[in-house]
Image 1 (cartoon, rainbow, N blue to C red):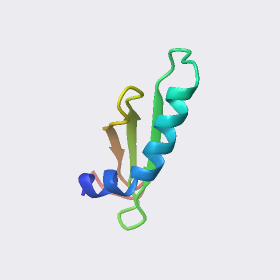
Image 2: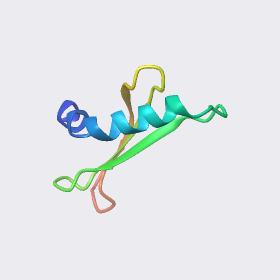
Image 3: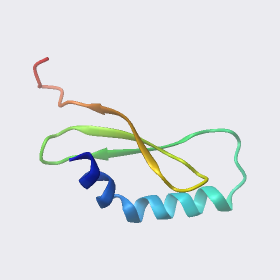
Length: 67
């Protein structure tokens, strides 16, 4: 599921990586938040500005989900 999510975001990652490499960095990390309409989860991914890779930092279950 996560691999599929990352594949869907490929265009977004390319655009973000290009923007991150073209601007001067103030030391702030770049995060991408992706919502999954089927499961209602929100994935938090961190963009590596050096190579454009995404790393899954966290995933938040739907608010109405039971633990």
